[in-house]
Image (cartoon, rainbow, N blue to C red; front, side, top):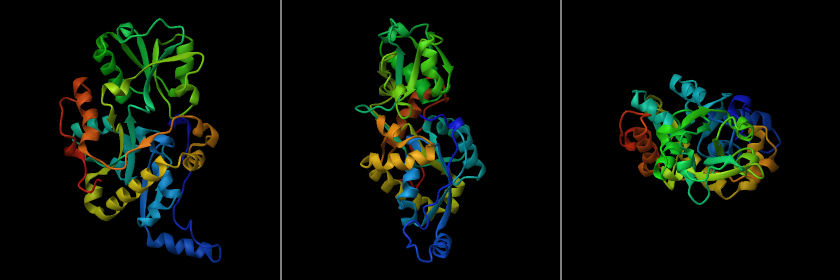
Length: 325
């Protein structure tokens, strides 16, 4: 995945993309005025790519929205922007939102984003150096494992996989590293293992000659769940129910389109992520959920509670919006 701290968003608009050339500048301005403005915060990678596709393919415009993408750099900034009102909707992992909800913050889920699918995993890939003696969960006891963040889904899923398969997660040490540094850290043996993401540098998702994949750790959470979602605040949704529902409608259409148009979506994503389209096409692409149910969200909450990231389990429906779909 492109490191969000080293990437910048390109400001995009879905308005006016299908207008004829004659009189287009005036027509675009008039069209934009007729659309509801929506400030969207996301990360420029495949995991949240469905919002970019919704803009470029006209799904937002069709739903009556003009999406303005904010130039934010990471998930923490996205969450802060939504909670402060600088963004109307944003992309976040469910673990972060579960923590926020457990602290009384008014986050509410609108629509799922990327899916973990057992048959085609794109995240939570536990890898070691090819020459490492580690082959089983028990072999990870006492080892140092790098993840993109402490107390996020990559962290807790790794601990869950180790415990579920005969190891002892209490003995491991989790350290935080950017994806871009993980391969080098493994090769230099500064860490014993790393939890990689296939939705970025193909050398990470497809380790090749120097690394070896041991497990898809997200399977220990569930074989089929949504680790990340699109969210807003309960206050914004209450004040803007129609745009919130229109966002859900547009994102559903985008998810369905993106799941069957990988070549076309790679070209769109390349502009936002500043990556060659050919590179994006070379790695395993994300599967997007096209509907939201509590069952897709609950596994995140359950595993977070089990490993003390939140104090107790709560029903996923507690922070799913009434306009969600």
